[in-house]
Amino acid sequence: MSIEVVYEIPATRAAVRALRDRGRVALVPTMGALHDGHLALVAAAHESADAVVASVFVNPLQFGPNEDFQRYPRTFEADRAALEAAEVDLVFAPGVDDMYPDGPVTVRVAAGPVGELLEGAVRPGHFDGVLTVVAKLISIVQPDVVLFGQKDAQQVFLVQRMVRDLDLPVEVRVVPIQREGDGLARSSRNRYLSGEERAAARAMPDALAAAAQAAPQGAQAAADAARAVLSAVAGVAVDYVAIVDPATFDAVDDRYRGPALVLLAARFGGTRLLDNAAVVLREAPQPERP
Ligand code: PAF
Image 1: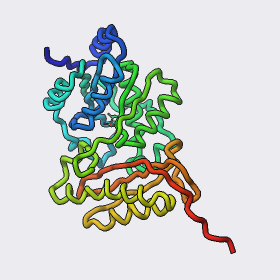
Image 2: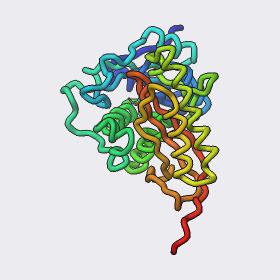
Image 3: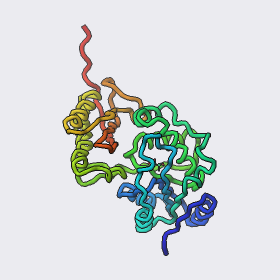
Image 4: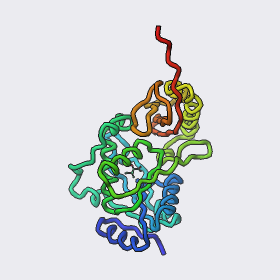
């Protein structure tokens, strides 16, 4: 039997009601252009629930006016086949008019101060758009568990905060970053890289490895080590190298010790890539006061 695809919200609610007889329902939200990273989310969804729903929706609300909404890859037939092979039970693939029938929504979820940092500083309004569509998807599907990839660490942090702050009745499960053989994090945007840019992009996992190695010398040393690796590669434009406390997303400095997240964003030609890794920082030796 071929996989069930629904486009409209009432039909989705009815199809999910029928799945609920089996037990727990998991939701894997995606924007399509699926790769092995998404399929790892589906595999984790099967472990976490008895029925799996995937959504495929390129959400215009999370793209800025000069971003790649039109250019974002739309590969629905391939996505559907991949989801079918991964034994997803239901695909929710609404159109923009199904999700936003009155045009751009006027009520949005505000991501707050963390939504304005890092990705949010480069892409103003992005996280309000992400949280609004994730809240809508959770409201439509009402899953027991919803799954996200750690590659988008700030998105994961904000979704967890939204679920906690708004008391949404859903468990958030985070799946580790999936990597290519040479360490590059899997991303729908990797397909835009030319051969040369793809080779240069290996600097992203290399920079994270350098940061982890320097972490015992403190936050500044870890950031400097990552930046040095990226700067050594021709044609890379670094947007940020940041080190944050994973519990708050506050930037940390050399007085901080303990678990931290190293976050990278860099452009390879016209393609912007993200990556991150957990490290453990030691407090850097402070200069003696005179
Ligand atoms: O991570 C993504 O693909 C998107 O931001 C998401 C969570 C599907 C919301 O559109």
